[in-house]
Image 1: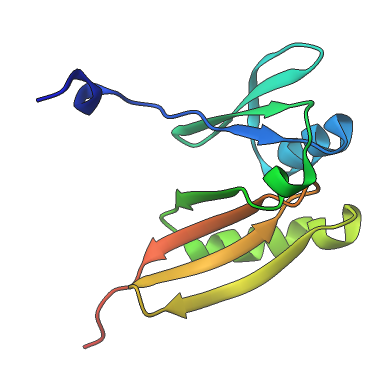
Image 2: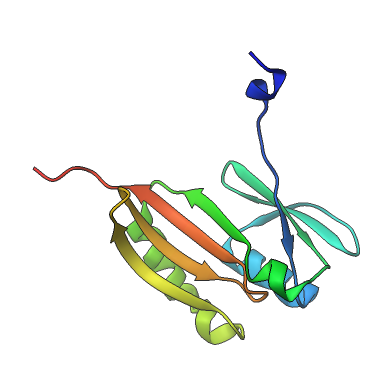
Length: 127
């Protein structure tokens, strides 16, 4: 077995078109700042972490997708609606919880830089 099979805590780097705006967005979303410098922040969402960086390339940002499993997708949707991020931040778009044929129910949320987040829960079989 490769030593890579014993790794944990993959931390993606997320671009920010406007670093201050994206930093505020993620704080409002509920992410906790673990560490910060002038051009990078390590955020935590539950058991997951990611780096927000003051770096932006449009094609990269708009082709970045992050996938996060959540336990209570419907509760997350209600929290997102209450936060009203789509009206508080320019460029934010979302898609309500939707069932997909690959067995997941997902919320899609696009951040201020164009990064697409998939928040998902496994669908339970009917009956």
